[in-house]
Amino acid sequence: MHLYLSVGSGRSALVFMLLAFVVTFMVTRLVVRLIRSGRGPFGNVEMDGVHIHHLVPGIFVILVAAPLEFVLEPHGTPRDLLAALFGVGAALTLDEFALWLHLTDVYWEQEGRKSVDAVVGVACLGVLGLVATNPFARRQGESALYFAGVLALQLGLALTAVLKGRLVLGIGGLLVPFLSLVGGLRLARPGSPWFRWFYSPDSPKYARAVRRAQRPGVSGRLKSLISGLPRS
Image (tube, rainbow, N blue to C red; front, side):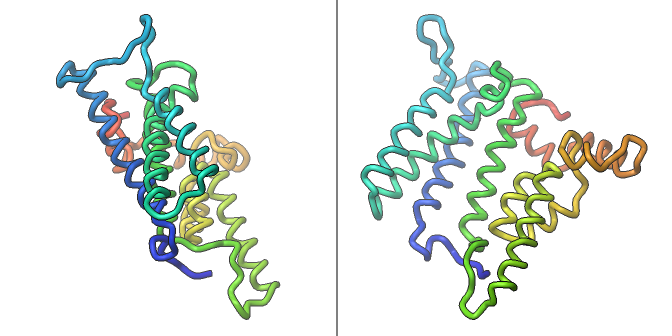
């Protein structure tokens, strides 16, 4: 299993999609914060007294870009442009991930951090996709038994990380095996299946996991900055 650069493998569409996704998310966050503070030329979009959230145009953009990709099967620049368009729609939609998860407008509440989590997680997976391994590619001369063993280990570590609530490390570990190992060795997040199954309330790991979750850390402070919410 070897590393490869996606641009050199004819997958430049991923680069365009990722760039459009990140830039759109950053611009969207800037605009909504300007709207909230009453500055700039922007304002909420309403129709018949109903506030139109930006996930609505995001969904429509996705519904246009994805079918065109399947029907036209473009190559080169048209494919990259469609990928960028899909990235724009995905960013607009995932920026309000907390809204369609809770079915209520929690954009400026603590639950709104889940939108930032979703965007950061998808962006990280996109970056990993640029330089990654193909977990299902068997190298020439590699025995079937060895390949099956390595694949089982990789999938097991990825599953462990996911069960511990380390979704990005777990899913990303399918592309970069080291990440799933890190996720598997870290403490489970409170509320995750691993936490419920294996951490009894009187165990040291339970207490450590709860204490660590209550500390914002660098990632927590960064998410507070991005989301515009006070630090938890």
